[in-house]
Length: 438
Image 1 (spheres, rainbow, N blue to C red):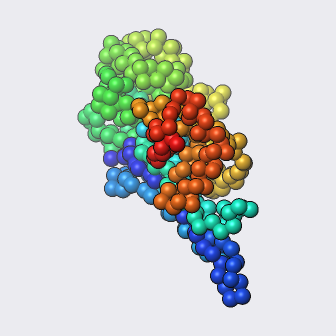
Image 2 (image 1 turned 120 degrees about the horizontal axis):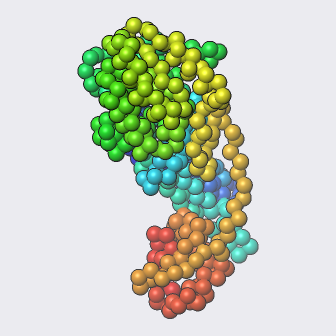
Image 3 (image 1 turned 120 degrees about the vertical axis):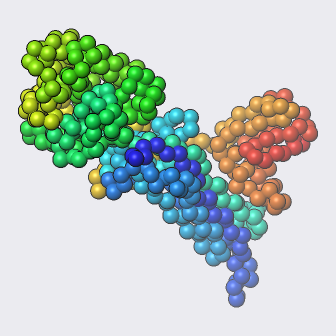
């Protein structure tokens, strides 16, 4: 079975801690602090590759953790940055967080997206030297890496989607038009997973997708229909396959049912150009076929293409079907679907795995960019820079706490908290730390 959904947990590597070190060498009795900085934790990166068929690997492995950054050392030696963790997924995979936000839509070989950023490394004590603090005996801790749950969904990349009710002959048509060898049998739901095949169409080669049979209610999940429908979202043309041997009324009802389910699933998908193929014409005479053509004609006109009579078994009408597909393809620019928006910091790679260089720019945020608001009986301070400073501070070190207080006072934090309505002795929350206003 094609595994097209998976949920995974990713956690980037934590940053390394800065070092507390004092240079002590012969003839250099007071060399000063020389603690190096910690390295940055490794990112978690998801990359698209054609070497992977589906998402079955993630049935057995769910948790992925990036490499931790190395700790700083004496003699101003900085810790090594953690290596990024690369996770391979099939081309055509969409990545969403648990809130449903699209983080990446990987539609080309080598395309990548950073799904969890590594933690920042802490600064060593050599970074805290000042005119009044000549020998700092504290350093910063590294920040933890980002952690999140992700939902992966594979949507096949195909140009033409074959849709219809069960046992309409989609697998037989795919085998007749391409070199694919799907399972074929004379009973409904023979196809349990989408199949792909390639077909020469004029000067182009197109990919056909045989989608498992749709039933009424497919758009809401009946018969796993919503999962199957997701695989035709990327197609540019649709072939509605109808069993002509069922008679004019049943053929029209079958076509209306499939159209209705496509429309309920996605109005954009239902509006896609296509044509109607009346299959199994080898089982009906000419008069009966004319009746079927007349019954489905209005719906075929609504779709925008002709109704073509074919037989996947005998091969009758297949050349007419190819010509009609070629006519519909002519005005269309068959290109890879547009990728979804990438997260900031994502790396979009092209063919061959090349990628754009990451450009680092200084942030406009400052320590003084924060807000103060009540939270229960305490006061919550929110600000990216100040929360990061608190998270990296060694609160068990008195000298580190004094330095943090100096930074907060320069940012006017105590006055801002009092202006918000706090009094001495009230609890102040910054990130995961709690302080007392004094």
